[in-house]
Length: 239
Figure 1: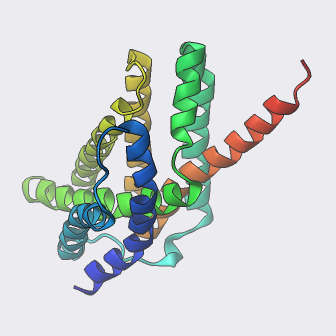
Figure 2: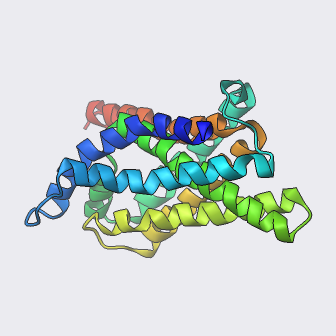
Figure 3: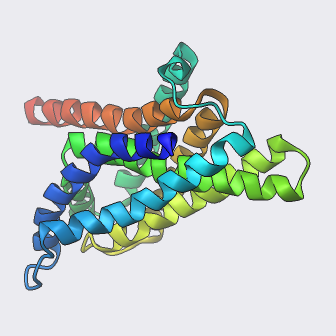
């Protein structure tokens, strides 16, 4: 119960920010439709996050994952998180944007900026980790370990399945961007989210949930900082 309440507590700030910002998102995506009231949007996110907080709290001791502790944030965690973020930047700027037409690339970049950095850090970095790593991955590892003696194999199976579901959960948002869903975009969206999920899952298993949260947050933070620098260089570049 204590772990579940702790997960709900650390998830609440991100949920509140998302509920506040998604009103504008919904108005942009569907201007002719009525936006649900604040309480309904809040309830929707709570119904999504709270069950997974309890699910993870019930099974975490049964699979032997580390408890939530800041001691899990080590130099190795920081370096692996940076590696994950840099691999994404190489893929995004070095491949995806170069293989999209100028209009679609502009819309993709504009869509990426729709959520503020604090919402990306607190909702993506914390709420999604509570759902997909603390809740789903913990449960999946427990289920696989009932069938397979090796905890190592069970962990990778659970990590992989949670990462795939994490990627699939982002597909509706991609389809709402009002841009053609090309093979490049679908490949990018799915493969990037699976990669982030695997990195976060590995860190969750070895160092604890705080390490997974740091990795997910750094993914968004490094992207945000690079984007700001990239924009600045583009604006000041000689014509």
